[in-house]
Length: 142
Image (tube, rainbow, N blue to C red; front, side):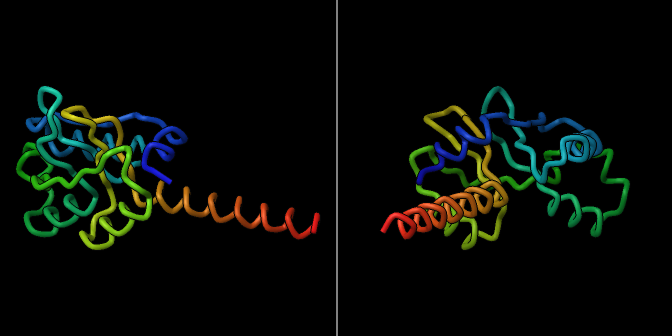
């Protein structure tokens, strides 16, 4: 299975903030949308990614005053991405090796989605359940 299959099921919505946005604005967005990361984009280009881990780390280091700083001072600048044609097992390995939980999906210069480890796990569980059901039906008819 490919990343495209996950995006076709989950949707292609992309939540993003500008690098100059206050960290408090991004925190509010994460909370309201119940998501774990947001892309930091400027003029349609990925500048970074801001995750819950980034926020917890910087709050621990510098305290609550950091909430008034721009997202660009906190975000992870080195963003790993994937393509829609990448396999689910390939991105699982990439996420495990890189120890990150969110992966932008990019085609050419355009961001077409964002995959989380939760999306991957949900997809794998559904795939497993479908396989189990197919085996049960096969056994019934044998």
